[in-house]
Amino acid sequence: MAKTAIITGGGRGIGKACSLLLAQNDYNVVINYNKNETAAKITAEEIKKKGGNAICIQADVSDQCAVNNMIQVALKTFNKIHCLVNNAGIAAENCLLIDADKCLYDKVFDVNMRGVYNCTYAILPHMLSNSNGSIINISSIWGQTGGSCEVVYSAAKAAVIGFTKALAKEVGFSKVRVNCVSPGVIDTDMLSCFTDSEKSELIYQTPLHRLGNPLDVAKAVLFLAGDNADFITGQILAVNGGLYI
Image (cartoon, rainbow, N blue to C red; front, side, top):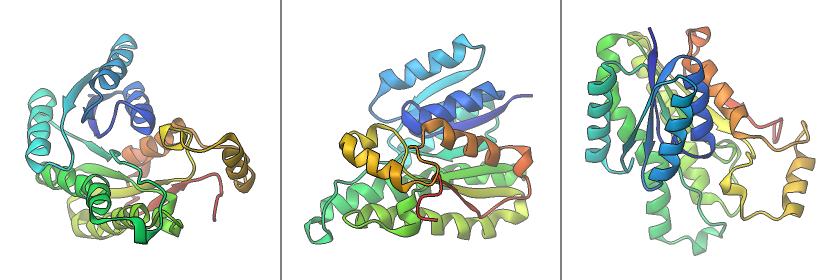
């Protein structure tokens, strides 16, 4: 019987790669999106054309009421949710902390951390009652190492790591696993502001001498979601090509 996964921000970038790969491995996929309905629907159609099963649900992950509604629709459609991938996130503009005002702080934390909390809080009672589930949070290399001129973003992603480790200890008794994937430099829209020269420098600094791609991250998510990782919880899996090890 097919399992079901919810991927927040599942229509683009890393989220899309996760949606496609999980669908290829017999998961029903719930593609969450906030504003880009077109991208979500295109991803769902790609899945369906390959024989998979996918639906799209709009919800701003920073809005608890919207998230609760998304979870209820997903459960009504598929009856059971086996995996939650908290992928939705936004990048902050590169700036010194003294130039990062409260509005920027609130915006970054509302999506990158509050979104993880909201989605997990909404799905957790279902997983606990079934004594089964895998929650996978997407952090960032900056959440592990910190990034100059990325203080607010780094702090939000570090919070995701702390959330992951603490919750894994709290819900392990119910066979619910909580893990985190920490991508390095991944070639997505978030790199669009980088020049070719800057990308070349990042490649040079990476021991495997290439940028990561969304599929690299999706493969880690698939592993943590599945039975091959059934004794793994509270872990931070770095997908970074050896950068800053």
